[in-house]
Amino acid sequence: MNPFVAVAIIALAVAATITLMLFIRRFSAPAGGFFTDPDRAAGVFGVTGTGFAVLLAFVIFLSFSSYDRAREKASIEAVAMSQLFRTANLFPPDTRRDLHGELICYARAVVHDEWKTMRNERESLLVNRWLSHIEQTIDETQLNGQKQLVAYGHWFDQVADRREGRRGRLAEAEPLVPPLVWLALFLGGALIVAYMCFYADPAEPAFVQALMMGGVTTMVVAGMLVVRFLDRPYENANGSIKPTAMTMTLRRMEDETAGSDTARVCDERGRSRRVSG
Image (tube, rainbow, N blue to C red):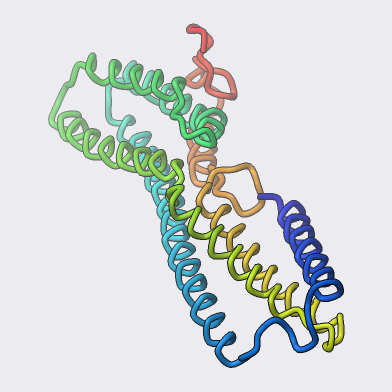
């Protein structure tokens, strides 16, 4: 989420709740507030606030764990791609050329296409197409010598790492926090804000009352915005996970094949020049 949008949402929420507090304070609240026993009211508010804080902290922890896994899986996939590119050097010249080009196109498709489709919780058909090309190329490889046989075995180990990295990356594109938990967070936050309204007291300075309500509202809304941000790690916003690791791997692969037509089977965005994509 854009930080300016987040600040605007918090500011609007704070302005609305402060306005509500001052309105109740002026037109409804008796002197001394609505509570006849402030200690008992404070105890109930403490239980409510603590319960909401524990739930919010637990959800933030889980969301951050998902966010961290998404970044880790993306790095694993990029490292596996680099290893596959080097392993391809051990295959026959025609196979090596085809694999290098297809691996580069796969990386371009991940960076420029799949990172966008993950925002909608979908995988990229373009990436899947390049995977099919790579598998077909390796299946048709004619191996000669012990070195190529060993490389062939290593290839599938590295493919497993790449597959695991991509699978984990795609899995984290789906929101972790279920609707029921969001409902609990919204109800808890609304309950705390509503409870604060009963502390309205015309005998206290308006600034103090506004500060109380503003502070509580800020923490409630900011906490839920943090959960929303961590629960969608691939959005195009400051702090979201970017395809940095794959971009670095792609640049290294392109540098190693510079001057040849290896990567010309696709354009800069990974779309095939031969197959509509």
